Image (tube, rainbow, N blue to C red; front, side, top):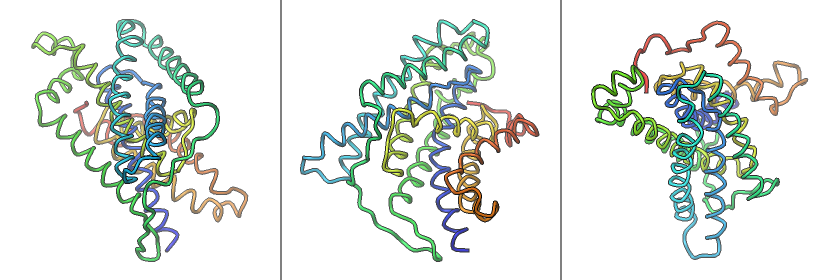
Length: 307
C-alpha cells in the first residue's frame, strides 16, 4: 500500500508536468492541425536558460526560491520569443503547403534547437543547484516533498488560468473561432495571424514553466532532455484527445500515473527481469494502444470545442 501511494503521488507530480507540455502540443494542433515536434526543445531551452540564470545568481545573497523565480522570469519571455520566431519563420510560410511539409520542418527545427543548445551549454548534464529547501512530509507511509507540492499547485494554477483565458476572454473566443474555421473567423474580423502567434507564445510560456519544473524535480538538465519529454507529452495529448485542452490535462495526469505505477511494479510483474528504469516503455505502450483502439483519444469526440 505504501508503494502504491508513493507511486501515485509521484505520478500526479509527473503528470502535472506532462499536462503542461501536452497543452502546448494540443493548442497548436487545435489551431493549425500541426504537430509541433519542436515543442519539447522549447521546454529544454526554458530549463537551460533558467539554470544559466540560477547559476549566475548563486553567489548573490538572494534567497534560493527567489533565484529560481528570477530564472523562470527570464526563461518565460525568452521561450515566448522563441515560440513566436518558430511560428513566424518556420511554419507560417508553409501554412498552405501539404501537411507533410510543416511536419518535416518541425522535426528540423527540433534538431536545430538541440544542436544550438549543445553548442551553448555543451554535451554534459547540468546539475540543478540545491537552492530549494528539501522539506519532506509523510502521508500514509508515503513521502512528499514541498517541491512536489509546489509543482502540482503551480501546474493547477497555470492550467486554471489557461482555461479562463480560452473560455472567458475575447482572446479565447477568437482562438476557438480560429480553431473551428479560420476563414470564417477571418471574415468576422479575427486577425488569424495574430491569434496563431499568440497561441505559440502561450504554449511556449507553458513550456518554460514545465522546463524549470523538470530541471528542479530531477535535479538535472541536458540538451537532449526535450526529445523524450516531448514524445511523452505528445502521447499524453493523444491519450486525452489532441486538440482538446481538457483532454491534454487529463491525458498528462493519466500518463504520469500509469508511468509511475508501472515503474513501481514492473519488477514484480516481470519477476525482476525488468527494472524501474524501463518506465518509458509504458508511455509508448499507451500511445500504441490509444492509436489502435481509440485514435481520437479519451475526450476527442465527446467534447467538440478545441483551443
